[in-house]
Length: 570
Image (cartoon, rainbow, N blue to C red; front, side, top):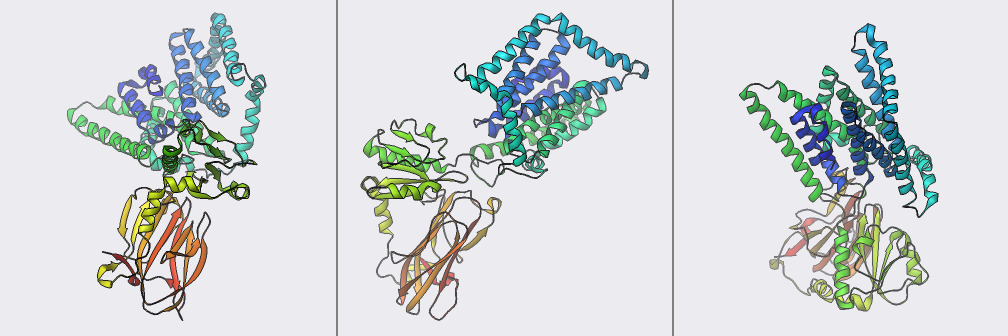
């Protein structure tokens, strides 16, 4: 709809400008990405553009219907988000600057008269459309009252029109954990919107060469909205769409100007392929972000999006419901659970409590990490647990009654049991390196996205999401055999962030499990000469990812377990 709303402005930046601006808005990785979420900004930029379109159409036609459109759009912007105060301030200042430029370009002797004429024209238009102005004022208050009162069901909410500004001003200053540097949005442009940034800057230059009221207005709209949002310490990636809208219009102005001076066929032979290549790059970036990497925190636009690990959670719920039906009782005692109400819509007995209740016991219980210790105190009976990442920083632990878990997940348990140690294995049956299976979940369930033989010792360090070769959360399960040349007591250890465990001959030797920062945990075991089955599990839930598999042989010092003593079956 935002793309369609650009059409009334086509006279101001031409057919190629309209096409360019429309394609940039439609294909923009940032705008398309956040338009798929329930986020305020998409509605905000639509009604912001509606205000601009209505204003300039009224200035051309003087028809009262555009007054209604403008006022209704202003009212909707106020109901959408508290940052409306920034939008309106930027619009007002940009419009003043645009009129000043227009007056400044007129002959010196006429400037005062032209400046005075702006106010007299405004006054006369208000008088001429006094009924439209009156109706618009009533419509403005009605829309705000309707939405702030939740359709006449909560009248105290009307106070929020002003109270929300106070709350947001505190949030913007105190950051709330979302503080970013001044050039944060520029960094996002450079990584995800480089073609629009370059074309927009070129459009800014072109606009000041031609100095029409519209182009000057859009230029300062882009500059001021960028500066204001960059000065505020509180920054989130979806705010960038407010800056991209005027930037896309500036890009359209520039492209239309370029094609306006193209006269010869060989010019078209150059510009059209470049044009197609630019939008091909934008389209590729948008597809990769929206359909492949939409929950990959290595991309800065991915901020609080639901992890696709939620599909593993729902697959587990589906397998449980095959035995107990969709009427199975599920107690969600997690403080953080959105958007699970949507995913659990078919489970009529899914109960969202928001905290650990006095009697949480049920066939399935979901709890976050902060409430897990409290839940354990209240549990009755035996439970199995599995962990899932809902979104960055939000973990859910599913507690499933043991009988139900064994009945449903028996095949998986049998599969795991099949990988337990074989009593005897010869060297001829083995090749060097453990087999590694990589999963996009922390429990290493389902099908791995990668299987390979590890040619080196198990050791890696990724300090943040940008360094990781895989998106979080991910789990790795290494399996094979450990060659012991000298019998004795061996100490094994893992240094990991997040959890890791080591099983040797089916026995848990190192328990470094759970969500934590880098931690070094050891365990000892007595081993005889020969080959011993080894299984290592590791998971990363986000942030840094570190894993080292270490040992201390009898009489030796701690070091990485060398790949020369690790094998897998041919």
